[in-house]
Amino acid sequence: MTAEFQNSRTKENLMKAFAGESQARNRYTFAAEQAKESNLYVLSEIFEFTAEQERAHAKVFYDHLAGLAGHNITVDGTYPVDAADNLLDLLHMAHHNEMEEFEDVYPAFAKVAEEEGFLPVAASFRMIAQVEQNHAMRFQHIAKLVEQGQLFAAAGEDVWMCLNCGHLHKGKQVPEQCPVCQHNRGYFVPVDMAPWTC
Image (cartoon, rainbow, N blue to C red; front, side, top):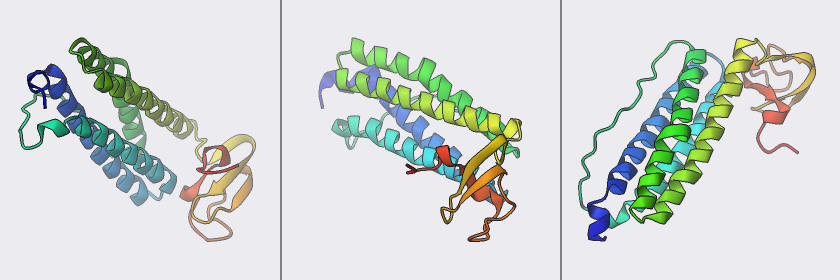
């Protein structure tokens, strides 16, 4: 641990980022539970997938603080309260928060880290900001599908995958239940959004 790092703004920004990513992970885990209760497994999986990436971001920021092990870092921060009964509202809130990190928060933190001479930290802030943009676009895309009634239906014939058993369904909309495993339609996702497809 260098004295310069111990007295830096970068140290504080790393702790703010760690706290923010940790909170985002929990918010998305809560949203995933809410989606599951609404029989929208696909939304639950999207929130869980993103939550796990937020955990990975938190670890990157925390690892940069390893030289301060045994110390406390005091920070002030502003963090969102994303509580809503409507999953569409949660998707919009998530999109907003991710864009804020991408456009404002992490670029500002990167600039400070660079000015203070902590170039690896600046690089982490910039790279994670790009991932946050991907998260924002993911949430925006899913919100648009929900708003347009296209989460489980399409204008033309499409291919959908059951995320439980892998069954592929061709049609303009998904069935109420998967004909293979009998899971409800909330398990279906357009095949081009399904993980690990060829």
